[in-house]
Image (tube, rainbow, N blue to C red; front, side, top):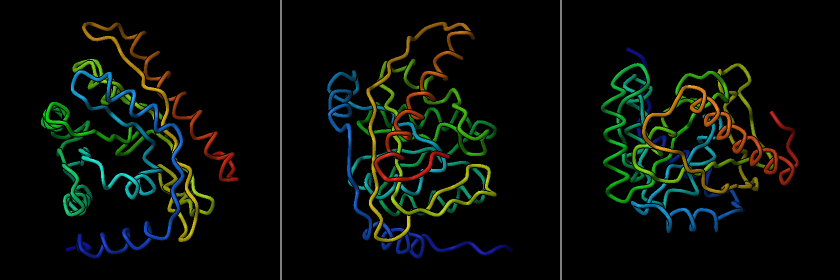
Length: 219
């Protein structure tokens, strides 16, 4: 049996790290405008999987719902996320997908913001999948691109997502982009592909700006 770290230990470690970071938010007006315009008063935040850890700290005060896989790793992450007050829908693109989507739809209707790593949980690296766009289409809610970079960070270059861990005492540029809206109903494949590219480009542009602000090379 493999070692399964305690959610309490995970929380203590991440909370301790986050407490040392200094977050600088850019584009918060985009977030406020999107929520005001949303039919449910909520939105779908979209970021790359490699930025997941950097994103957790500054959003702990939000009512956030996330998707976690049905794998053993997903079980560990679920325990931790629930411990810090996040709402978790279980499912993935390969296992239990319908249940996960249903849980996120319910969360959006009930006033929770949804955060999705749009290239997760296993990649391909920085390629947007359909999930976030489908939520936007079904409910008519805004999709908000988000990116973050730290002035000092470790990058696990051998992991599929090149996962980033901010170094203690770093400054973090947290970028919210303008809301994207996607047409509902029957959408042809070509338009779906264009929508995925549009979202990817929006996240890339925010990340490029965050990289400049923090003096980090793009990667």
